[in-house]
Image (cartoon, rainbow, N blue to C red; front, side, top):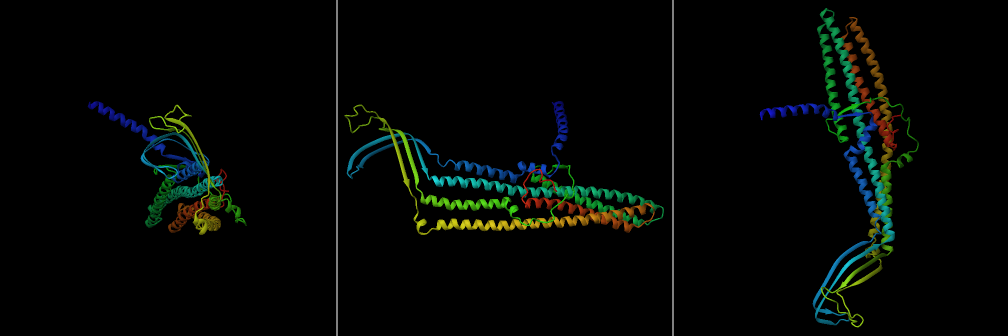
Length: 456
């Protein structure tokens, strides 16, 4: 028994050892660019899944609204029994009455307001359209969050690479300086300063590793994945090829195609239809139709017809058909005397119009802000790039002088510090420039297609 347990234990350990590489591979995600991430988000992001369910719900409600003209079927049994007093149609009473009857069969009932029914379908169609616009709005917000995490993750990794190269250079110069110290050509304090600079770089790398982990987790959560997912990015930060020098003179067409604006327009149209439907409900009659075909008679015994001569043979149940058709107007006195229902709908319409104006103003402000952000980010990146070029050239000259035996540690440390700060600032500006360019495209209502993800 003990030997069998040992065998099973070893077998389990072997299986776990074989599965561990597979488990680690399953947590890796290869990403070719932001476009692939957005395609993943369409089905994986929790907010977008919820939004898609809302679209499906509005679509189902639209199909249900189209059934307004279909009648309601019924089927059942109705039994009646009375014992005692009963009043006749002329007001006379019969005493000691014993009466029972049975009705069973199918029926059909319908209530129609033709104009109002069609308007209900139109409003349901508007609700379905509005749900699609709300999904686009939510999708834009999710894309912005994904783009920000994606560019910041690229920034963290490229900064780590730059810091690692700087650390290697610092180690190399430190070794050369140590040779000069041992030869009595430099002070040990110079070497200690270089060691301090190396530790500073390593500290910056640890901070950047924390940033990388934070943005990696944020990206995983946005895509509904395990926070421990390892992202293998095949892309790198690069400046956009071009961006607009100025905004168009008229932003009307860009505002009109934004989903926020179009959703507000659907609310205005729905408010107009609500007023129209109220007039239809109060002005046009409601048609009521009832029909039934049933068996009607006595319970458990034959009926006693009034015309016995015409019906010498009787049965307990007889087929009976009934059809009722009516027209009715339903006009509440409050509608005629007060008109508060009309006033309420009119105020709701004005409110939606005010909301549309507010949304339009906000969208225009967003477009101007996005353009200014792109312009400022572009200028900052240009300045940072020049600063890095100057710092790298100064660092190379300082390093070459140390290799030649001309020891100027403070000069080298200052150049290394400038390079360190400059590279971080440049990559930060580059990530922001990419993000703001994407935000500008979203602000201008650029449609989502393969060209959207090309920053040109």
